[in-house]
Length: 106
Length: 447
Image (cartoon, rainbow over the protein chains, first blue to last red):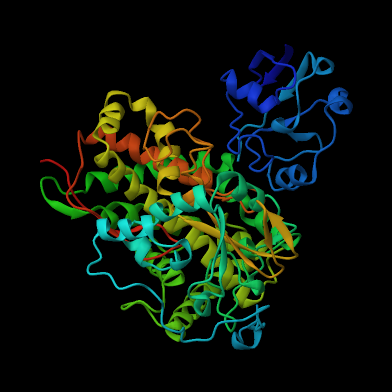
């Protein structure tokens, strides 16, 4: 299990154990973390699991794919550190990762 | 903006075998009558290649599901040849995963208006209306971003109170103990008021927006619909009216409505008139037809499924989940179409460059290899948000959150007021393979 901390826009924190290899959208949805919807089921095709990754974790969470990048760039709330949670897989290296969420998903 | 509208029309030749107007007669077997049982039994046993599922008959009678179930099982990616002289032939993509594969591959599957656009029937080649849903990257992205803020979460919070007060007003004005048309008095009323607000359009003329929406998606061949030339004239009339609004707003301070946003954004402020018209059509149809038909569909489904209606009455907290289930079950736009930009293989089938590829969202939403009991309407369905109705990828519905908000507020307020709303008869459906909707549905609220 990998400890992931989902942080809502309000600052509310949800500490969750996500199975190794599971994507972070599933990790949120399976644990009823509010603020991550995952409408497309993990295809980087809806951007309803939009989140922000703190700079110190970015090297470990990797780069956006082309589709992911297109989807993120269409969101008003896009930032340079935006990712789609469904495209990041839990692994031991990410233990303790803080995933920040926008005020709303679109 | 230029005022010489005709000079700016884009005329392009379609890539291959463009159909000519008027369309040749449609091939269809003779049926003794058009009752649902007869048609469903035909679709259940007819050779797959004998059926033209684009025929409005299968939509007006709500019988198309029988054919799509067979395609999903027997030929999930299937080319329709019958009536090719009317629609050039098209690939049916019917399973969830294949629809997802097409929808997320915008590099290969184009939405471009000049290739025919995003509906099964090509845009009129002498009346191409560019609109951002029918554009590829990069132009699509910048135009979509110009209007995106109006339906973003932050902006919707500001609309919530207005939507609720209007919903209350409309519901409180409904007759008790007598039959009335839910489509006219509720579905059209609520969506046209919202649309007028989004456009900064005069509320007293809101039904013009409904009219233009209906004309945009109407079938010129059907009795009672405007013919091709007449339709173009009506839409040019719409353009003129909106151009007046544009001219008022382009030099004024931004007012936050769609016309003002388009007039002020660098990506859209120099649009040629046909492109302004195209984007108007997109935003009017997108904000009108879809929510309207989900408003009607929801009430219909609850009446058809009394157990679900009882569940809802016992637990109003199910509204939000039910809204997603309504949108799945209705699938207000049955399909989106793409054009292949290169030869490609999809689910083992070779798709040729230039082929028309129709993603049947209505079929993907009934794919039982991905969804649990998809033919059933289940308001407390697990993960109900995972449906195909908004599409996926870069063209995913921009107004989905607004639609959900309108439906959520409507059902919250219905449950506060009415113990029951009774659907009196089968609704009259729209004869269209694109807009899956209702013309009328008679209901009664007990006195």
